[in-house]
Amino acid sequence: MENKKIIVTGGSGMVGKHLQKFMPNATYLSSKDYDLTSEKQVVQMFYYERPDIIIHLSAKVGGIVDNINKPAEYFTDNIIMNTLLVKYAHIHEVKRFIGILSTCIYPDIVKNYPMKEEELHSGPPTATNFAYGYAKRSLAVQIDSYNKQYGTKYNYLIPSNLYGEFDKYGENSHFVAALIKKIIQAKRENKNHIELFGTGTPLRQFTHSDDLAKVIKYCVDNECYESFNVSTSENYSISEIAKIVLKACGVENLEPRFDTTKPDGQFRKDVSNELMKKCIPNFEYTSLYDGIKKTYEYVNKLEL
Ligand code: NAP
Image (cartoon, rainbow, N blue to C red; front, top):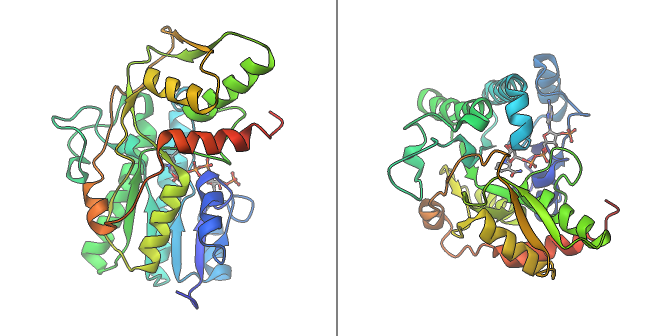
């Protein structure tokens, strides 16, 4: 891969910053370099950057409330960005394209869990991220279609919920980042509890962003063209996760209280990593406890 130009879209985001540790020689782009929802700027990106390999991380990503409030933006930005990127990658004869999807794109309910890749189109995504889910799921359809019609060897990875250093710790944050921030604030204000949204019963898989970054690097280095789920096997309820997080942050005395007037989101969406483990047999995922510990140590030093 030494002489190949690797472009990472969304390079300024959480996953992009984790990937920089493992692939320091790639070029990391943000929306300040090119707005990839603009066809003109996508054309310019290909003209100026001349990529051999594209790792497509960029997306409009947000929490459950923002997804509920702005479905049109989540749909339009994501579907345009993805459609243009694959279309122009093919026009410019880019040999490798790795798209990053999300387990939010899976059907709301299936018969068997954990979900395998073949379940992807067996029902609509959950209502709380319906627009984002369909837009991102369409990237899988587009990549599969290009491979079928044009013989490209593009692939996509479907990670479960991600967390880690460089996550958003301000507005519009995801569950783990919001939880860590609440813990830090509760400690600062000498509170004895933290408040969490929903009932605490939904099941979630949280994968550390370093693990996704390592899988992406493996695919590039080893010419792995398979599309598969990327997720730890750990699948816990939100209240179990809260306990693990409190322990990893050394604040087991804080009581998690659940605000049941707030939405829960999808009840479960755990995916199988069987296919991924066939492709990368000795891969070891970071445990939730270890990943949170590492993340908390980093975030605790930030001025939130
Ligand atoms: P993130 O932190 O929100 O970063 C998003 C990235 O996309 C940023 O670099 C952003 O650039 C860029 N971007 C957004 N709109 C753009 C536009 N119009 N033109 C060009 N670039 C644009 O996201 P992330 O958490 O790293 O997620 C990376 C990928 O993993 C995404 O495809 C996401 O769907 C997927 N994923 C994420 C999670 C999760 O829990 N975070 C879970 C599963 C899958 P700026 O910095 O300039 O805004």
